[in-house]
Length: 405
Ligand code: CTP
Image (cartoon, rainbow, N blue to C red):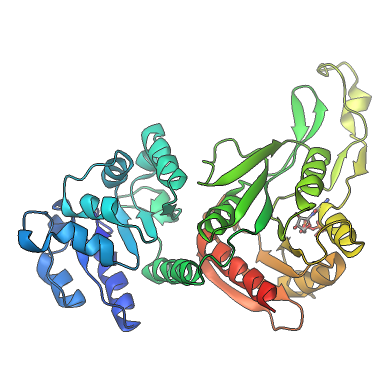
């Protein structure tokens, strides 16, 4: 079922319906009354080949909401406005769309589209967190041009990306609970290294990729532990346990402890490679020690990923654990980002490496990422420019592939 809420992006739902139909899916479109202000019922009926209604009072004898909700393989709400997200979060059933979502037991994917201010409003943030806690996948909106002159996060992702996410979610769901009973440990976010009680060295990793992995792994039945570095603002996915850490030393200790009995270990965190050699016990004052402040002595941090691979290979962890690393790469005059990624894959010794090309505002803190999945004995798999949820699904597919061999 494709639910369509009343926003300007409703026209993109037409492309989404067409994409599903071209892949041989049968589609029921359930718009809200407001959505029909943007796209007429006749358009959705013609594209889907099915009748369209907005209320439970049409065609009452077939009890439409129960019928659609019980029989759908997937429910995708695209675009989902702030209003429809609020109504779903509140468990309301005041039209056919929300009533159907309440009945559905299949995967539900909500794809928000709204102005940046509405997306970032604490009410919406809370509602999205509620949906995710309940196991609904909420895709991150894309960044870009919105209605009018504004631009920012809040744009509906492209229909092909939405369809791709729905397909990978469904494949994962049908693979069953391919990860049922498996313990997956995922590091997410970035580590921070203290300079004094109020200052630190850190990076801009938002943690979104690690959290998307946790969300999808939990939906596939895994028992998920997130070791999260400085990601306080992100909602904890339903079914995942979170251990918050700040520094690389804390992250390493938590990862090595959690990895002991893990089936899969994913290092999605951006780990600080260096830390200050000395941490001042009290706040450094301006002018206090100019010489001390003008250069900061750094010492190298341990490589957590390499350490985990070494421990696994030494039999200190589950010897069959699948270990996944990440790499953020830029190319240079003689090497492409992919060349560097291949080098890093060999150096780290992990089973899979998700390599992202970074630079020009790509990846960190953005909702889109692009890159390659490297795995031994296989050609690099290009990961299409997609949402972090799509990337997460593809990484977990590759993990499941290795586990099934
Ligand atoms: N990583 C780690 N411990 C570190 C640094 C990185 O476990 N001290 C992990 C990251 O979580 C990621 C992978 O190693 O999974 C690659 O991280 P990246 O920063 O790209 O690699 P580096 O080894 O730091 O290489 P460089 O910065 O020189 O490219």
